[in-house]
Amino acid sequence: MIITELKDVHKRYHLGETQVKALCGVSLSIAEGDLIAVWGASGSGKSTLLNIIGLIDEPSSGTLKLNGHEVGEMPDNVKTDLRSRYMGFIFQNFNLMPILTALENVMLPLQVQGVSAAEAKEKALNCLQSVGMERFALHRPDKLSGGQRQRVAIARGLVTEPKLLICDEPTANLDFENAERVMDLMCELNQKRGITFLFSTHDTRLIDRVKRIVYLEDGTIVKDERA
Amino acid sequence: MMWLKFALRNIYKNRRRSAATILAVALGFCSISLFHGYTQETYAGVATSIIHGGGVGHLTVFKKGFSERGRLEPEKYLFNQQEIKQIQTLVNALPQVMLATPRLNLSGLISNGKTSTIFLAQGVVPDEDKQLRGEFISKEGGLDSATPSAVQMASDLATILELEAGDNAVIMGNTFSGMVNALDVDVRNTYNTGVDATNDKFIRMPLAHAQLFYDTQGADKLVVLLDDIQHISTVKSQIQTLAKQQGLDIEIKRWDELASFYHQLKAMFDMIFLFIFTIVIVVAVMSVINTMSMTVMERTREIGTLRAIGVRRSGIKWLFSVEGGVLGSLGCTLGIVMTILIHYLIKSMALTFTPPSSTAEVTLNVQLDIGFMLILSLLLMLLALLSAFFPAKRAAKSTIVDALGHV
Image 1 (spheres, each protein chain N blue to C red):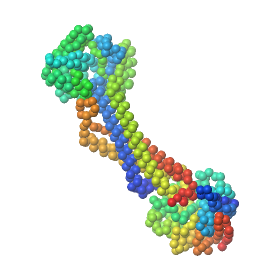
Image 2: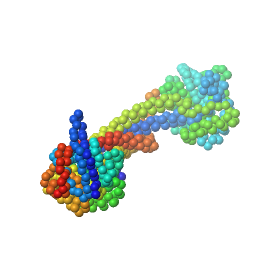
Image 3: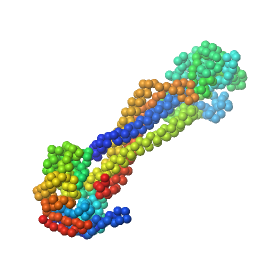
Image 4: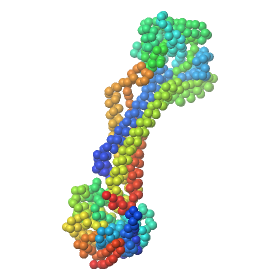
């Protein structure tokens, strides 16, 4: 089943008087259960593509469908609710709330949805357990290593049981050992729980672990191959 | 609750900055509350001193037209014995009335045999005057009906005439029929009127002696004392209605209508209060705006993350508004504590000062106006909340991508 579909998506930025073409006519379909790596050099448009798919940026032209519904003209609140229900995000810099414990960080997306604290806590603990971080539930992010923080971020991304987990360079700030662990975790969650992952990377050591690789070059998909 | 937890933790995280803001709000709150308390105490003190100390009472009943023509033709605006009794019966029937006592004002010359000077005097019923003046009766005691010629003399007048308690003097003037009259008076004791302008002129004497001076049995007014200052309007209209029913042609003045000084003082203090209030509020609000603007700026990436995981723009506004509101409420709470402590400190120190144009020291007192403090708390909390709302609104408007990329 197709979760997200992009057709002829363009994205242009204005830097002063200069126009930067970040995406040029990108078309892409993401099916449920995929584990997709978007590979490309810095400035190739990986993050822009992920942001548009994650509804946190808007294309300059082209169409984007989520579960068959076009989202382009939807009001901001509707898009926000769609993000909350269907998407999970994992950021390069983890982006955990520094004032919250690991457990509270994982509970947060559920509480935003209006889930009760007790239910959110139970689900968050399960997620922390699934990423092997239950022992650190009461630790604040500044007391965790980079790899541990990213695992908490993955748990936060998973806790709402999203259809699609979008990870922007999830291993970029990790050493190779931690990057491998995070990658193992993503593969395991994809295989065992069927969670769809879309992540960007320019680390060649990770791309042989995925089911599908989308190669981006200057804002254009130059190759889309399945493993 | 979630946003409250966020707010409290962020306030604690930036505790130094938060403490400075809370302190600014608290000091602002405290200074406004204390100054308000001081003005209220002053208004109440002046009112009491006019009503009781000055013997003006809560209401004064005159013959109709007295305020326009009474000084020129006082004899035409006197109440006779029967009218006095009729008004007293009518007024005393009201449950809020404690006293209705006749008065006669007089003026003339007073001489010690060598020197003469003008005097202004008030003829009062001694026992009723004691009830009206209460704690304001001088230490030496009030007047005595049994000795009608024994008067109380303002201290500066006694000094001018070189008179002391036990000395006698002569008062001179015209009766209402135009005859020259002179009476002996004995100085029973001296007292301080509290005001420079009157302390060298005033005499208080029993009504009977004042009536003898003017050769009349009447009084030019009746002073009415109530059980509570709040009842003035009600009682005034009741007396007017009853007097009309009984065919009495009277006019009634409130105590503050007879004391223009009170209104001038109040207008001046109100203006100073408004000035101080505006400055302090601006400083306190600017402090919150500064703190919240910095907070919003520092947490732009956090805003982007929250938006990405499903927090609506309104949620972001709430998040920071709650934080501003909490800062404001903590500041107000501290302000209330500071106000109460300073209130009791001032009370325990019993500081005194001499007001302008006054001859007596007064104690510095500051009222604790709980109602005002609650309203001020609500106002400051609301302003603190709004101070955070606008920077948050601006931040919530920015795109998520820009917010996430903020360094």
